[in-house]
Length: 194
Ligand SMILES: [Zn+2]
Ligand SMILES: [Zn+2]
Image 1 (cartoon, rainbow, N blue to C red):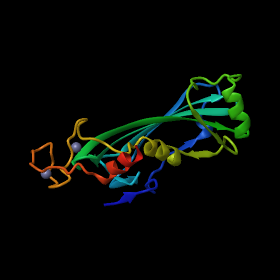
Image 2: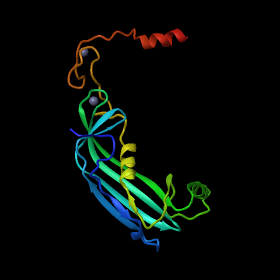
Image 3: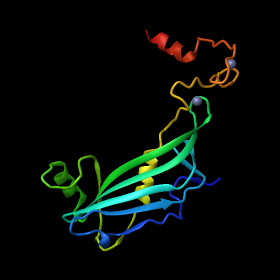
Image 4: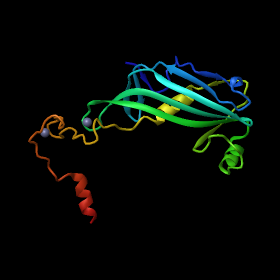
């Protein structure tokens, strides 16, 4: 199975920045991006169950473009306690401010709220661009939103009982008679601290 640590090379999602209406009218594009195999992140393997859906909503605001990128996809991941494969619906979004100004100047203005930017009330990543006539490749941004919304761990059910550390049975499925030795060396350290 293919394992992705970077975006799949076949992803194609470019925006012609000149298409974004200077009048400030919203401009939207949606994408369905093939996603097969695994995504490797946080030391975990997320099995993709279908394509990634992404949307790009944008507005001109002065000499800047404010973009809202949302990403959704379905994955599965072993439960961190019992290792049963568990379904995972990922939905995430981020805001980006593409600017021709120096990012520092823009960030300062933005934080001091002396500049009206429609709908920009949360955290925004400020990205400097050389010009607004070019194509903007959305792949790195869509990938970033996806990766940041992959949970580090998942539980099949919130009260999953996990695996017995002695016999390895799935304690959600059956009870074993194993007796845990409570003299765990990790607790010994704590006891010595007193
Ligand atoms: Zn579980
Ligand atoms: Zn057991």
